[in-house]
Length: 156
Image (cartoon, rainbow, N blue to C red; front, side):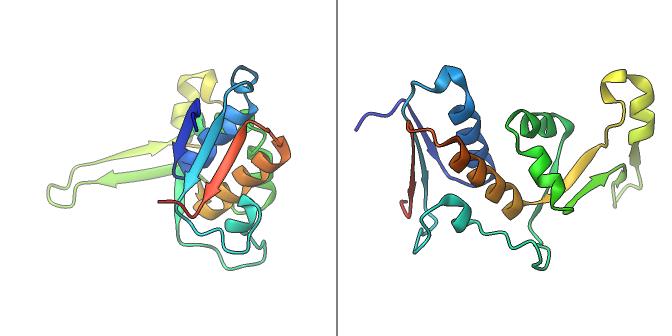
């Protein structure tokens, strides 16, 4: 069967791409398939494949999400859902160093904010659990209910 777009992998990038395409008016007429090897088992929805019990212990798989990615999440109506969980942590400063040479560089969100109004009230990044991002992307895909999007799980 011919499909306009096939997304292979339904993790962070694949689920975000599917969400972006499924919510785009330009892509509404396109046939989109998201394929992932994760076993669907008894789950009937993507958000059940990436369940996210709010009172569970934090996952150790996290990603640093850039300000550009937060703007994408805002455009997809996912950012507020992520931050409401209280499991999003801002990164306001960091120090990166070379262990063998002793060289290093520091970053601070306040110094970047002073350089441009574009970065006003913005952190360097946000640490978010990968499973939480996937769960919210799949919930958003379910809410969009786009008939041109097909999700296939358990395929390699």
